Image (tube, rainbow, N blue to C red; front, side, top):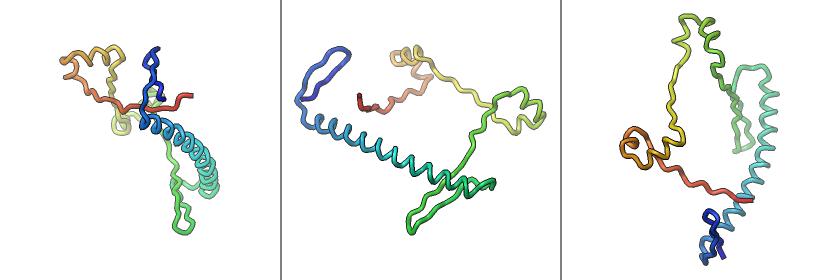
Length: 138
């Protein structure tokens, strides 16, 4: 029997297809978690091997191949401006050419709720329904 809980209210529903989907989802999630753990262990070995082979080489990508199977290991850097003032001093006139300035407007929770009921606000915002999230409850 499928138990359905909405807020504090719980009821039972007979729905074999939903019961099967729930059981299959939980089973698959556990398998995926186990596979992800195993994959990450192998990934760590490959990353360490790539670091050892590349050493101080500035190349950021290496490919390993065994017969027809191959994996590529790519290294990269996430570079962000942490002190705009000092960077501006160091770069001088080149600052504008070497740094991209962006402005990001993000509505807070109150505005998001208001926008769902106000057509005037909806016209100023891009509103998309998020994909439903399904998670295993432990």
